[in-house]
Length: 326
Ligand SMILES: NC(=O)c1ccc[n+]([C@@H]2O[C@H](COP(=O)([O-])OP(=O)(O)OC[C@H]3O[C@@H](n4cnc5c(N)ncnc54)[C@H](O)[C@@H]3O)[C@@H](O)[C@H]2O)c1
Image 1 (cartoon, protein in one colour):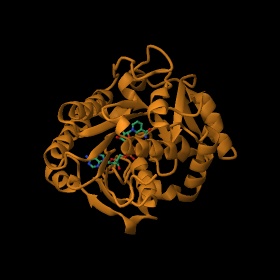
Image 2: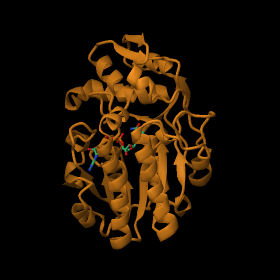
Image 3: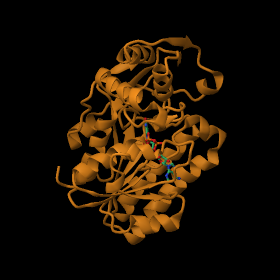
């Protein structure tokens, strides 16, 4: 892929899980990479995520809510990968205004800055399957009603649609990827703020039992390298402009089956089956898995890394580096 050779690329949320994996790949492809991240402790940003590439990227510790910083940072960028976000569903219920500021208002402000100062850039937005809410049918395709069940879902939905709107009205090239559960090296494992898989991995590697709530819910999981590839394809192609695409995984599994596979990847481990806590149950979406045939047809993307292999790579990473993520 030569679309990124010598191109200037900005990654918001670049010290986070997906952003740092994307940065590594973009450097391999010859891009000139700038990362912007606020390093708010409750979120997934971590300087250790860029340990191997630190001297090859420009890092700006700034908040995307700061219009002055963003105005400076987006200028002359050929691509903006817009991944900075508040990711916790529970936090969005406890503190809805912070989620609103980051996931909606700051997104609108980044788009306004691009419209005024860099209208030729291409922006790829990290959206989420959470915006569908509780599915009416499975697999969920992009025509499914958007009916989020939590504040985070509503704000991410607005963030996504601001991107699509700016494409349609102002001709700025944008698109969105609706990510499902993403996992892999560099994910936040300190707690369940990013995904329940994180806390499962932490406890497993520490030799402690983890809890599976419910257990029968169906999910698809995407390995981070596959997600990175989707971001690259979406950025490089004009065919993605104005579209939102689902990403899916190689297989659909119950949470109980995922827990079994994770323990196996670790060469052993215990977990306890528990009832869903009441506050989580209220915003649970039940079963979900994606129909990702649109991105397969338009951009030729498909998930490649099977869950068993991806979990093995992830557990191996945390067996080596867990301390840096606590
Ligand atoms: N990981 C998943 O399973 C998943 C699923 C659906 C959607 N997404 C979306 O993908 C994007 C990346 O997620 P991730 O899993 O890498 O999470 P992450 O928390 O590791 O990355 C997000 C990064 O954004 C940074 N950030 C947050 N608020 C900021 C602000 N105001 N200013 C500057 N930086 C800020 C954080 O410090 C963090 O490094 C997010 O927008 C998230 O909503 C992720």
